[in-house]
Picture 1 (cartoon, rainbow, N blue to C red):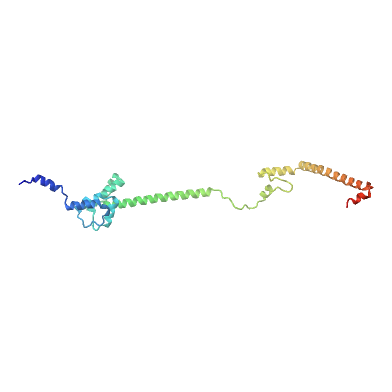
Picture 2 (cartoon, helix red, strand yellow; picture 1 turned 90 degrees about the vertical axis):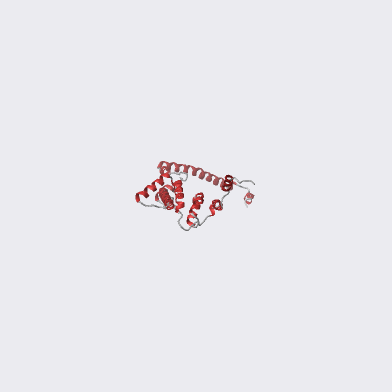
Length: 231
């Protein structure tokens, strides 16, 4: 009959996980589905909850009945330090010691997140106010164009051509004024009158010659049939 080695028996027995170990490992594998863990012993939660993310641990804290701070307080301190830095952790510890108060790190984490959110919102509000002031300043400096320009005596004086003066092709009001004054001077008027008379004289003399020649032709004609050709 073979004798059983007690050392081998102990090694074989230790390598086999217990039912509790299997349950803990199963809970770790499905930690994202955990909710109320109030009834679970703390020594088991100390093996399970360190595998939670920040959001998973927050969900378990809100869903659980009872106080989990004996297990989760050190976990929240790690999350606080990871997000806000070790210097901030030291400053919080120093202030609590000076004021002789003590808070859970979950409460400190939530207060810090709220403080950061309020500071961010205030900064955004200040930026919005600056943009509004800048837009208002730009709007005040813009030139407003009127849809309808009211009549002006100066506009009529310089813009209109006036009787006998064609200055529509001149865009500048100053040039229009100069051209109108030039056209109104006596020398220009005399030259315009002489040109007008020189054009009218040939026209009148030529019309007189035509009328005289027509009358002469009618009077010297002796052919009685020529008058009938006109009808």
